[in-house]
Image 1: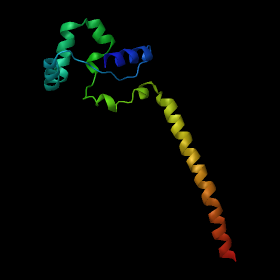
Image 2 (image 1 turned 135 degrees about the vertical axis):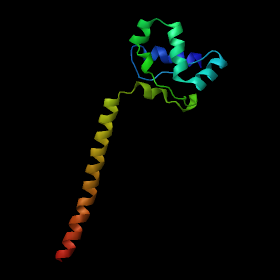
Image 3 (image 1 turned 90 degrees about the vertical axis):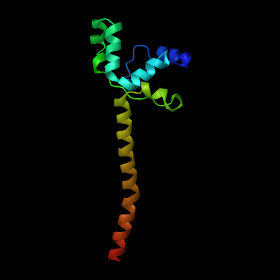
Image 4 (image 1 turned 90 degrees about the horizontal axis):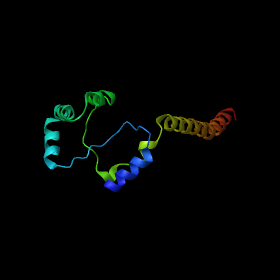
Length: 117
């Protein structure tokens, strides 16, 4: 797992994905973190980090949730730009609409012509 994290760090260099993972070295810390949640995290960073670092990283505003299993995480999705993904989705919807119109329009004309005959 450490090797995968190192590879991901190299690949992500300079690109903020807005998502992060905390990895704990001690099971006791994990249990405390799960039990006390954000208050425990705030105490932990206050005791170990400089105020300037906490403010620069806006660590007091971080939100936490349980991670998905490592095998369920699609690492490539962390680098995808949401604007590009949204644009691709919009283009696909327009394409689907045009195909629907092309397929439905001839059927409509055939049905209209049958009414006149």
